[in-house]
Image (cartoon, rainbow, N blue to C red; front, side, top):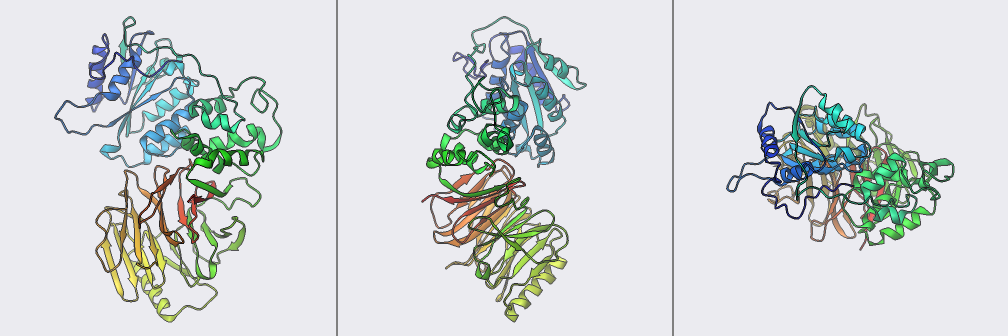
Length: 551
């Protein structure tokens, strides 16, 4: 299998001998705003194509220049499927994609900041496992304004010929003999037993992905695509490992220890999988920082999957130990925290989509709809008149000035808005803080010894604030990805803050000090919550997970 790594003789400062004209042409193409978005680097074997792209990936501005340039992302295609490539590109560009089509959509709709633009350098198309599918993906990506692509392949590659025939393509043709910096051929790596969880977790994840996609497997190994398989869900096959891998693939393909990969795979395993897999994966995941309490996925029957998750809430007071799970239709299901078993539905009449849930300590549930309006679902006990008046005042305010995020504690209702401000409506008056640049995407309120508000924004920051005081100047978190969801709670381990980011990462913070923990389920995360016991809930379009941090 060809390597994407140049020879040790290459110092990264100069292009490979004999490829200088090609290097000049590529740099000219990069700086020409009217140039085609796709550039093909072609040539005979040994002409230095892969080394040239390696040089371009590392080539920076001249010394003393501070001008930012778009990121250059090198992705080797040798031996890869279109799906594995899509996961690798998505991960490098900070988006989440379950399929190649998802990747194109995510890049087309994500915010195209100058720092968010990128040049994809794709090597060895001729050695890919699915060159035709990859050529189609390249063609679609070339239509996305956020990215430019350089694709390298040998002259005789049929998929390259199809790309060359496109209406808007630049071509850099290298013509020369082998040099000292040409890539070196590597022997093909053996495939792992795709039904062995230990082998799968320890193997090259992109190799595993290609094998699951194409059906490649050691012939005669029981349970593989070339051997006998039982019927039912295990015919996915491999006892359910393949289904779990496809569900969490983008997370699994990241560089990580086998124990962390085993945890992600365990969390993605459906209830119809081979019952021997779960204890084996749990043992393999013993070194991971999380323990999986339970997981519910699309298609699960015992107990049934609660449906796609758009919002989450962890209730206290009369609803202690109950989870609120809202879907895109506006239905809110009640689940038992212990095992995700059904505890009924929330009796409400909110039309349209729900964007936030805020269970109050007295059992009342406040709901924010997709128009930014407030709705109240009363609990089984009567509310004090002063809380009724507070809620009515907030509802009247949001009818004029819609909110984008919602939280509630004993005597306060907290609302975020599209301009970046957080408003705490309380019995002692209104307190406000201009916490974010752009829309507030989530707020949480913690009624601890020192009550505080936590907010997340489209600007990629998470900030803490105690109403009546100045906000904490330094953000609790700051990343180049928007905050999708956020929740905080007082737990036996102190206050905990869970944050879900737009790139699929979930993090658990301890504001009073202590290490943060992270987890990536694979699909886009829609909602997170922290329970009163300190467990972390993670909701996606097809899964609901409950994790506990190991002490």
